[in-house]
Image 1 (spheres, rainbow, N blue to C red):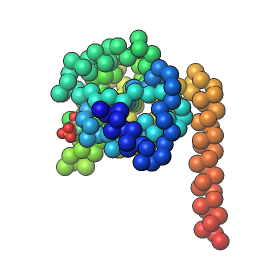
Image 2 (cartoon, helix red, strand yellow):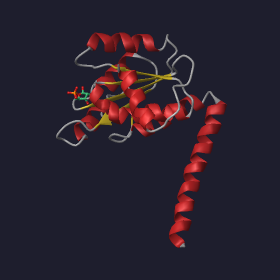
Image 3 (cartoon, protein in one colour):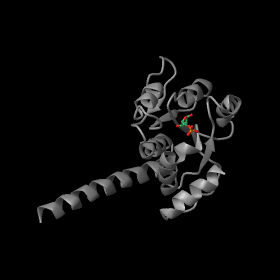
Image 4 (cartoon, rainbow, N blue to C red):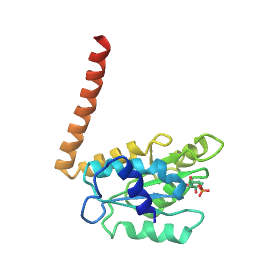
Length: 181
Ligand code: RP5
């Protein structure tokens, strides 16, 4: 269901279809209410033709599923996990505790505390269990960081990231030139 919801969201923004192949990145989130934020990670991965899977896995509501997801991810070929959650956002940290894969945490602004609760829940991991935490609601950066991590052993992907950075730089320069005119 979440994949279908995601397709609808991404098609609205005319993004290309899911790239073929076994998923290399697992995008998980605590609730379907996180999808409007987390879709941005999927969008980036599609842009870079990195196959990804998207699932709802809750640390609190489906703890058994979280456990089996984290324990099986590596043997299924997943190389990076992006985990988004809001409020008492335990999902990224719990998953990081269960897998040797790199975990990127996305604090989702989901409550009356403006996302600060999610940010602190995700970023304040104890020594020994790292989660690479991006800014509140910044699933785009989570997608980009996943591409960079994969790029350390995939030179084609790394070259595409370098091109992406050049394109962003050019965009800024063009905007600057327009302002000066
Ligand atoms: C967390 O609680 C989810 O990650 C979500 O951000 C938040 C609220 O979930 P819902 O009540 O909208 O399902 O587990």
